[in-house]
Length: 83
Image 1 (tube, rainbow, N blue to C red):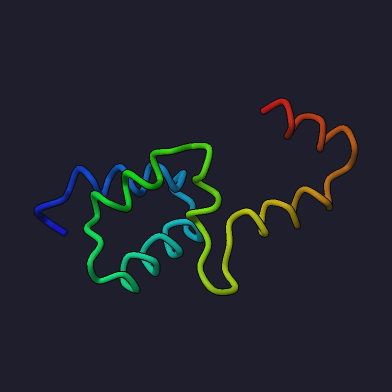
Image 2 (cartoon, rainbow, N blue to C red; image 1 turned 90 degrees about the horizontal axis):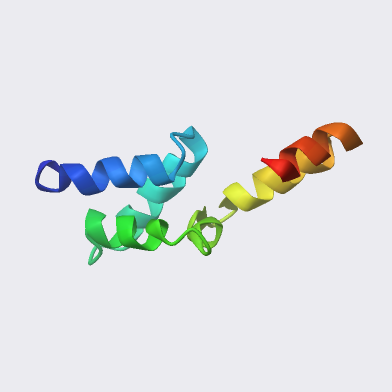
């Protein structure tokens, strides 16, 4: 990890510094022994597929966001979509 400090910082930033996202990223990295931190950083660098990458087993950032979104009031949901 020390040799890939910049890539590790990129991964954490791509995770939005969210603990769940970081946990998932770390789990994916641990499960794929041939991946380097740089490989994961590159995968997470593609914003169009980032939520797909932040999923492992029964954990997923997309599912968590969808669950939270469904509980928002209409005006809150609108503000979330605007963001």
